[in-house]
Length: 130
Image (tube, rainbow, N blue to C red; front, side, top):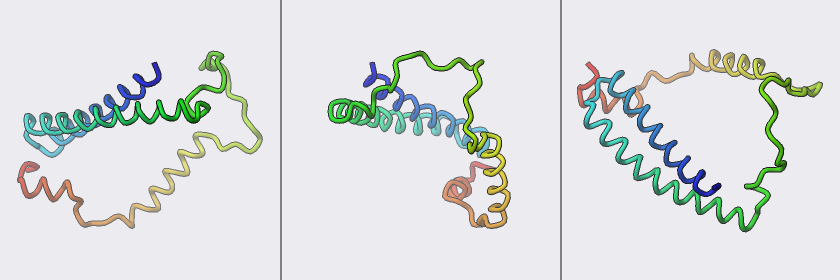
């Protein structure tokens, strides 16, 4: 049930992140495929299994100590995607938030560093990105 979903979801999230990073490193930086996939999926698979167990233990603890944090407030089915959400008079739309975030990013671009990050340094030292 809930504990299995929490544990398995955490594990799968770690593995999916490792898979996407591995793919990007191989396709974008030219990293060796066998080493990249084996290393990242292996390490993140182990880390994900441990995190999954810890997450399930945390959810179990919360279910015993504070069940309101891990149980739904209502048991009815969720609202259909066809139904319009009720809006308050002061709510910010999703489009407004997206445009605000985009504007913030545009303002911050000139402040970005020209110094390479750690991944770029490793790729340059290995000479795999050329």
